[in-house]
Amino acid sequence: MKTVFCATYEGLDAKVVQVESTLTKGLPSFSIVGMANTSISESKERCKSALLSNDFRFPPKRITINLAPSDIKKEGSQFDLSIALLIALNDVEVDLGEWFVFGELGLDGMIKENIQLYPLMLSLANQKFIKKVIVPFESLKKLSKIPDVEFYGVKTLQEAIELLKNQQTIQPNIEESNIEYPFYEINGEKYYYIKEYDEDFLDVKGQEVAKRAALISAAGFHNILFEGSPGCGKSMIAKRLRYILPSMTSDEILDVAKLQVLDFKEPDFRPRRPYRSPHHSSTSASVFGGGSHRAMIGEVGLANGGILMFDELPHFSKNVLEALREPLEDKKIRISRVNSKVEYPADFLFIGAMNPCPCGNLLDEHKECRCNDLEIQRYKSRLSDPFLDRIDLNVTMQQVTSDDKPSISSKEMHKKVLEAHIFAKNRQQKEFNAKLNDSDIERFCVFNDEAKEILDMAINRFALSFRSIKKVQKVSRTIADLDASEFIKKEHVLEALSYRKR
Image (cartoon, rainbow, N blue to C red; front, side, top):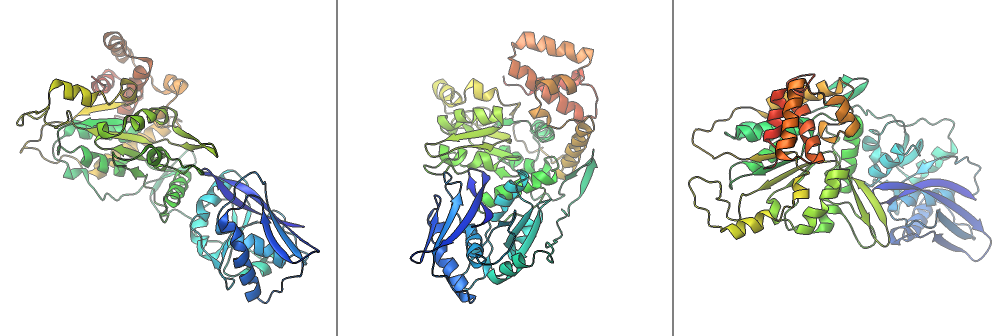
């Protein structure tokens, strides 16, 4: 019996699969066991054709391939090469050791690239399962970005056979894996950023309060809600906010590339955080993920590390809005089905945009609101207090006038965000301000006496909940970081209080 290793998906993570083979006496046959789906069952025909095309003669024996453990469903064409190599090397003395083998076979023995290999490899590498891997040669450019793994690229089945026969003389393929973007280094960690602004804040005229809130939101990763009349710039600001977000570590860049593959896109390995904006008619399954047999990732999971934008917020279904409360608080989403239970990270910056009333004219000085009190109450009651309590910054947009002028560019705002990010990292802070836990709040959110007095007065006057108090503390910390202030001062607390829900 010979064995190599491969992997399959279970939710968002990869599970190691042991591929075993035996050739025994009996009527000639070829079977694959171990809960293999159709794509793996079809690999029998691909393997037969690839082997016969390379002058290999099938032995007149009973060939059995086992995929262990047998209680996990396996799927994907990446098992082709493992199965073919085990059959081809059955009578050859070769040490397969801890080799992982991935690749889809063509009928002529050529090994084809599979875009789904990247998230598999990244997951296995993060779990410290793999060291030496045989992969399609075409995949090397992407896979070489993954650190601490030796990749051996092969173009044909015959190359893979010769590679395993001559293990003592081979060397892993070395591809250039450096991330070629500007970076700064703090405490041994590199933080990459990109100076490209496809949409610029110079396009937003006026709305100084909203732009200031967007700057605070980006610097501390605070959830934000814009409320204002149609056309006042809510969506414009939201779309431009992604370009001024903090820099990214190499691990974060790899994780974003993994999400791009799961979204059926080619990974670009750029230090640009994801931006997801589902339509308000989206179903719960599309937003949170799901499926009857395999729990697929949804918009919330794909936004991990970036922005999740809900435009026309009250028009989303009540089920979606209420279900969003858990990932906003816990930074993860759990999907339970009869056949699978998976957990996805969902650590994102949430942006909401809404009109003040169904017709949108309630705050407009020149247009008459056509809604009655009941309609306005019904419209706003779609957002529950527990949901709104998870929003850090609440912004009422200003009236648009002919005197409005552009005031600050995305480049200038991004520079301020990066300076605040460096300031926070230099005090040994690992998380963004919005993600600080209770012990970190005590450690990093240090108020001077005057600021502490203002906060105590606000707690008593506005009857703030524990969550609201923590949010004021964290927003105040971000405002202080933008001012490069070690301590939180009175003006920082007052500004943070101005963004609380009325």
